[in-house]
Amino acid sequence: MRNGLIFSAAAVAAMLALVPATRGQDAAHPGPVPDISGVWLVEKFEPRLFPNGGAPFTPWAEMKFKATDPQTNDPNLGCLPEGLPRFMIAVPYPMEIFQVPTRVLIIHEGVSVMRQIHMNRQHPKDLDPTYAGDSIGKWEGGTLVVDTIGFNDKTWLDGGGLPHSEAMHVVERIRRVDHDTLAEDFTIDDPMAYTKPITAQQVYKLKPGWEIQEFVCEENNKYNYQAK
Amino acid sequence: MRNRPVPFQLDPARGSAQRACDWLWGGLVENLVQIVGTALAVFPVTAVLLLLSLTGSTFAHHGFVSWFDMTRSTTVKGTVTSFDWTNPHAYIYLDVKNEKGAIEKWSAELGALAMLTRAGWRRDTLKPGDQITAIGNPAKDGKPVMHLDKIVFANGQELSSAL
Image (cartoon, rainbow over all chains, first blue to last red; front, side, top):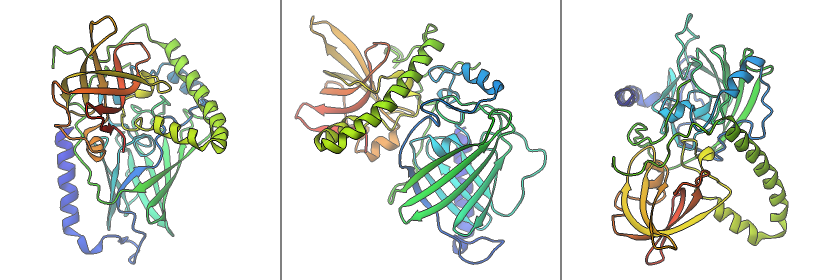
């Protein structure tokens, strides 16, 4: 995981070095696109999507949810990636967004994940399930619309234990409300786990002068993870 | 490091009942937030005190809500025996003399190093022998462990674990 992060950081640096002049442009639609680059931190940290309960579980998901315990079998206790949408919604560490012509790249400080949002292609067929899934994006006016599929089912939607299946489909709508504020609307559609799509919002604040720092979760992790 | 008490040992007895309590508490806290919100409009001083008491709870990522009682605060005064400047959490280990004169081995969990650094902490902020007061949220299971809110140095200077 550490080597992966180092490799990812090197890859980002290489890409940025190659295309410094075109930053902030969309290759498919030349011309200026909104600049959402920078270091951002969630405005308000709430680990749970449904702090008062009421998630629209299917019977399958309800059974899975009953087996979850944030004290013992949260995958994150074992330093596994939070995955999407959790690391975008419910992690109190900053992320840095980079824009290059073919991609929007997100390096998140809290997890060893570099997220790639592909701006110039469709989802590949027969995706191998992954923690972050496969993200493609397009600009609709001032809003970056990101469509993600190809998830594994090893993550929770939030810190409260909401499960999901490999069929999950996440759509994010990201827009810069003002210079210091990024707002994101999530729609999480997983018919196997939820009887209707779940919607959520998160607001991020710009953190000028911040740099993403190293975070090696395995270094001194005292929490026991009991895989099911 | 190996000889130190591990702050969190898995207790097999904590199962679904414990989880149910956590969720119940979550609901109560939500209702309290609404009631207190109304009260705040009337008592700005309360608002300031409440905000102060709520800071310091934002940086740990590892299920702290389920391990610690975030509605209560505890204060211990003692001697630093070691300071783990490590990810995913930093830890302060303290020898605390209780009312009977016996030494209790306390530990306080902090957040990740990057966030602590932004809040003004450094790897040499504490060293063995330092006398400090640690204020934070106590463990729900009563063990001598806390989720740190802030420390007060012997000279009265304070350092919060939050920004």
